[in-house]
Length: 211
Image (cartoon, rainbow, N blue to C red):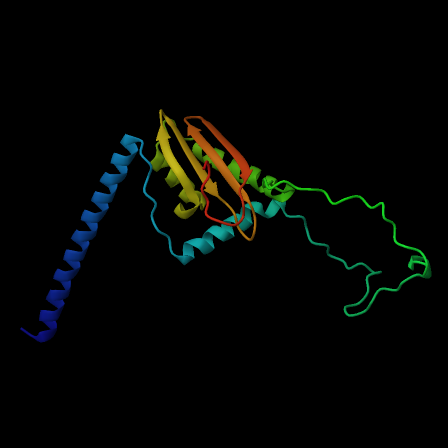
């Protein structure tokens, strides 16, 4: 028997061992998911690589595209060229002895409560429509099924929070913050009724809704 034949035989055996191990791992993973689904417990989060993050960001851009105003296609003919100061009319200058007006309105005091801007509110509605359409097809939703539906739509596990089933209702949160945005979604799936509410969450910091 030649050395090549020995190595080839060893390679086949090694591949068979790897295949059997992978099969056993998939069966064990499936058993854990079924157990979690039956118990209504929170589904464990699986890790995703950088490529999943890229796909997720592209999905956010695609879904939110209808909400972004179109950029102007023509330049303002009266606008100055780059590096050129706009002309100043004599009437725009203050007289030497005249003080600027002092009755300007005071700046508006804003509260620390985050709020969605118009674009984010629109994006929340766009996400809500596609998620509702996907989840309404579940007669008796489980946490595993809801996660699978969300994953299929492009929402990765690291952005799905608080996913759990209680008394036939699956609850979850989606962290859709990106590029300084504050968009988040709270959702429930209960058979043919799906409820999704968009809300603002601070752009900085860990996403911990409900705390």
